[in-house]
View 1 (tube, rainbow over the protein chains, first blue to last red):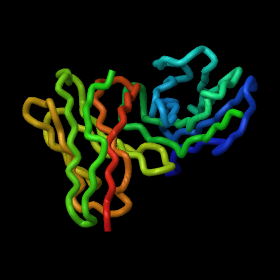
View 2: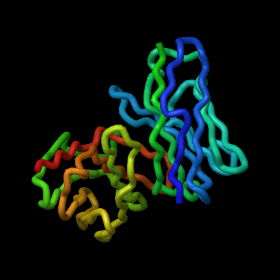
View 3: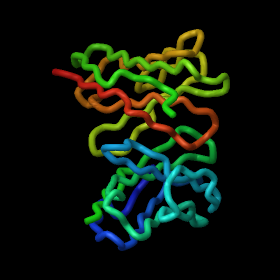
View 4: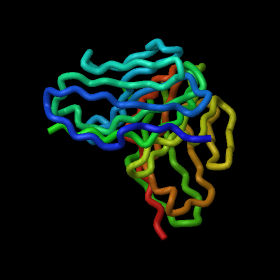
Length: 113
Length: 109
């Protein structure tokens, strides 16, 4: 069974631009969560989607948004990029909402210059 | 707020057991203890979880004290590939995982 895939793996953007990251969960998994990892703040929860609805949200500004499609694939978008948004963005999938056993993808490394 | 406390680092010799401690003195009755690890440049990997009984799977064993205020993750025969940051997480039925700083395990040859 294929694991969680994330595209692109690396991205360089300029301050003020926007970016969209993509995540394909493990087949059969219906919940997708997003996390941001930085050296200073560690791993922080962004949001969770289940059945195309955001079910849980972390403490991030509204510039961070996401969505989930009917096939459970998910995208997250960051608008008006700031230098501090440079991070590793990780996607995790699980069978359903509230399932803690999550499977993480390799992440997208975003660099904002 | 961090619900768990872990030492920042530890090391062990290859082939020996690695015992990783975690304190969670404020754990609630319906909260589980989960362990994840993150090998450098990879996403976190689920290892094991438990409520109050000891648990074992192909990767590790989890020993939870009777009062549930602390636990130990045991890697029975550590290899160099087990070098990673190990996160102890306390959680109920909430998909929002709160990762602390974890413990960096270094396995030496």
